[in-house]
Length: 64
Image (cartoon, rainbow, N blue to C red; front, side, top):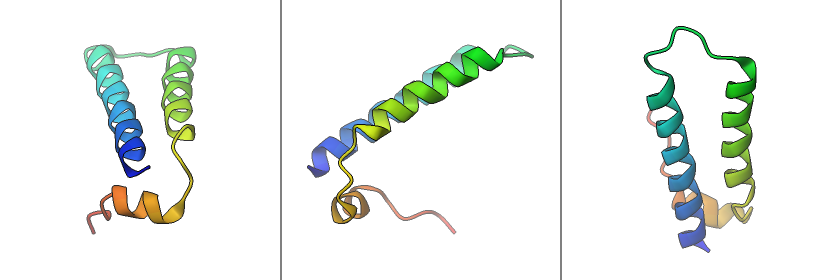
């Protein structure tokens, strides 16, 4: 299960990085493009198991 969480998080991060790469040189982005990117990320993360112990083990603690 932890492996699934790591894969989903990695996939979400890759999608975010790809979206940022495509939009960095642009001054404007349509709300539709932003909404599509956020929905894609949400769908990937929603597929992640919700077992709290597994998520805590797989996700590093935030940097304070």
